[in-house]
Amino acid sequence: MKLDNVIAKRRDKTIYRDGDAALKVFNADCPKHGILNEALNQARVELTGLNIPKVREVITIDGKWTIVSDFIEGKTLMQMWQEHPEKLDEYMELFVNLQLEVQSHKCQLLGRLKDKMHSKISASAFPATVRYDLHTTLESMPKHLKLCHGDFNPSNVIITPDGTPYIIDWAHATQGNASADAARTYLTFCLSHNEDIGKQYLRKFCEKTDTALQYVQKWMPIVAASQSVKGNEKEKEFLASWVNVVDYT
Image 1: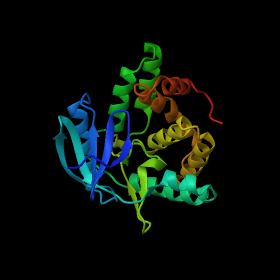
Image 2: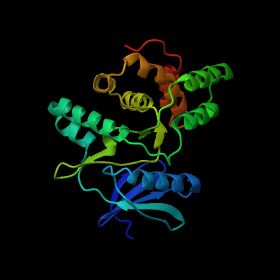
Image 3: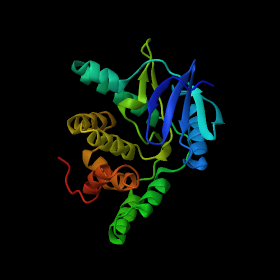
């Protein structure tokens, strides 16, 4: 395995290309159970038949856990948006259609979105009264079992040279409510300072799924609270502002 062609660097990992393989090398302090769970999630999602990179093996390189998957040649949808902003509407249509394709599947071996969110809310820094309200609201939401990506954003969609879309990074995949996943995508746009594009996305999602905007809104504080347990302080401050949000405009 060669580690001389860096594709991307993240806070907790570095991704390399070695021929037709992608090597996701995690920092030495990353917990083993999280890495193995990510590989297992990806392998389980493979069973749906969606276009995703297939896991080849999980190994250690210089003491660092590494997930080896297929390398997907192409550009991310985010790169394409940045290069051709005039095609935003076309790319948004593709983006939402891909998310709906994901959510059309079930993957019953995955963990449950509600269980994960309850755990995250419990681990958050919000006062007990706020956590109680969040837990209560979450428990009252409809229990669905759709495949949810957990971090569906344009950087996690790769378009190959022949136009085939692949969806990557299944570390946060769960089975649950599609509108919770839409709320997560919207907040990701906001965190990237693309709130206007986020609103365009959300309108498109609600239109295509015949979902009331207010219903997705109801998920926003829950998703924001569950996401607040990770990320930098600026992100935590922004997400905290959503926990007590009343209206979405």
